[in-house]
Length: 193
Image 1: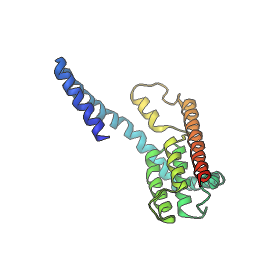
Image 2: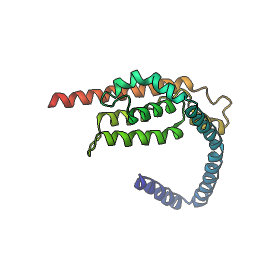
Image 3: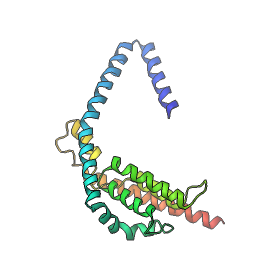
Image 4: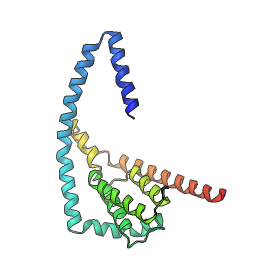
């Protein structure tokens, strides 16, 4: 990825040099840097608030209750992981946090879940459970998309949460397509053996 961005930056510099728009490029870089800092400040407040909410939810047991609520579904998705294991608990908590739109708060839980899954199945290859977990995190079903709402609010949206239906629909479709593809590939591997 560093090479891609390096080529894009070098290309922009060469193109602006050839076209004689180097002052506009410099102004654009400085303006964008200032906007990036303003954006960071604008969304950090909402992220801090939701991360605090996540901590409160974890401390009062809400995450554990959500984890138990999702356990029957997760047992089907992760049949090779014992429901009483730390890996299963971290998976449940990560998915609960992602559902609440707390991606930053869910990251440590996700890392712990992967660490526990790796411990349960040592080796160099990713297990089906690891692939499913990454897939679910990538699709990122969210009931409350806080980060996107914070971005929309920082850019002047009067109703930053009016995208809820679209977020729910696209993330559900992405998750469904990913899980079906994963199961299809897994079935093809078994069939080839």
